[in-house]
Length: 233
Image (cartoon, rainbow, N blue to C red; front, side, top):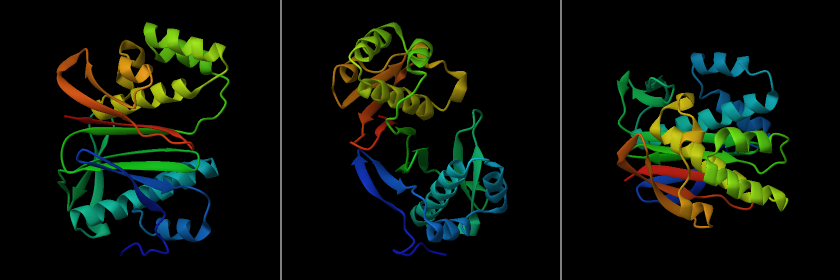
């Protein structure tokens, strides 16, 4: 099974280093959703049914089907040969005929937008957030950011702006996803690169607990959403 041009709802977005990033269109579309459903296996269809909110169900469906189609092309395998496993903290990895495929990927979605990052080797993480008004800005600033970040974000809040909040939020989420620790890592225990807090669109980072590994951090957002990509160098 292949994804024809008519059914394709993803497109190239950015290329950075050895990483390719694709944008996934998650707007409602009955024909695409029906075709996407045909890509899911029984486990994924069961998971799809458990989503109570139609938007969450649609985002999972379109992102997972797009990921399957993209990986099948990259790994030169049939869809029925592709399954997924999970590392200790829940980060997924691909298997072809039950053997691990040494190919990195990460997925994120928010609202009507999704992104998929792919690389032949190395670890990576990606995060996307639509910039929407939230009632919990102040709570999140206190809970998820370090002292310097909090100071910068509270100044921004005083000006009635949120751009830096979403930039730093996606950077920290992408860093956690790249490291693969999930919710076991408190985001307030580390801070985004200072240069990116000051307006830069890229920077480098080392986790205090894993100083030997250097990560490249990229702000890949646009006017429609905030997004960040992280990969090891």
